[in-house]
Image 1: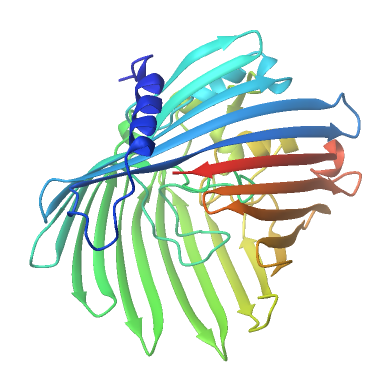
Image 2: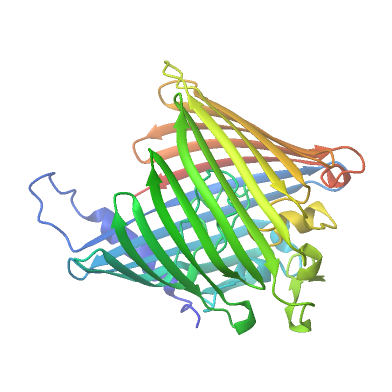
Length: 412
């Protein structure tokens, strides 16, 4: 199933229609059955590898979120992003395949342009129906995000839609083609069952979560099957003396004695075969603990620290492979211990600064800085710098590089 090639044009027109409508007067406008919002943003990026040629790239990204409330029990949600790439990176062979890759059960992504360094792609990353009853039951069907995370950074409990902490440009995160049934059991308590189909039935995912509250702490238990693993996990979130404390743990136990040949995949960016077993065909524990604290001050300081532990980490051949392969909850890092720290504060009433760093046990490290500035109510400007480096034998140290980004965003 693929998008029509004229989908981008239609959605751009819809945005124009929405923006041209007069703004309703709060409290006097009739209740609408639908909502339409989104954004358009441009990002320029420069990559400065220590041992290779520099790269300059451009990205125009437009997003639309649509919700239609059929009645008080049933609603339909649709989310679509349209991206246009141009630059040095998009001229690499198979880059278009990487951009257009959709790992869902349904292929809801299409490249409507792939020529001479220009790559255009449209993708539905949200498309689902939600039905709620008066008896606290809820049913969800389609492509949506399964929000089982307790921690803010690394999420071992996110067995359906894990993501890389370095992908700052995709704030909505990917969705999952699934069916979810949930039932409220009382105050801050519920049970959920999720089934995520795969074109290869051996890779189907299904799990249940029991969420409850005890003495002011949110807690959860999960159990199920994640691809070729049995998985059991737990998470918690609360605070101690004003400091937020969160943690997650998952145990992955392979179901099969060996990996079927059909699980061999090709990395579209590197154009070289990579075997999923090399990323982890063994039992492993994945756990994280994090804390943050907000200071009541003019600058609104926030400090955050996090640690990630993987008993049997993945094997990564290169930083490029690690940073571009889709991650799972069992492959959040390539070393046994990983550490993260972050500090952010308001530079002024309209700007905020964030500084972050992560350190891997093999000697690799990452440092990042970002500055965001509010140009107007619907306009935002952001500058980001990243450095991947480390000891000479470390994964990041073998291909050290500096990246710089400038982004302007208009929301509607």
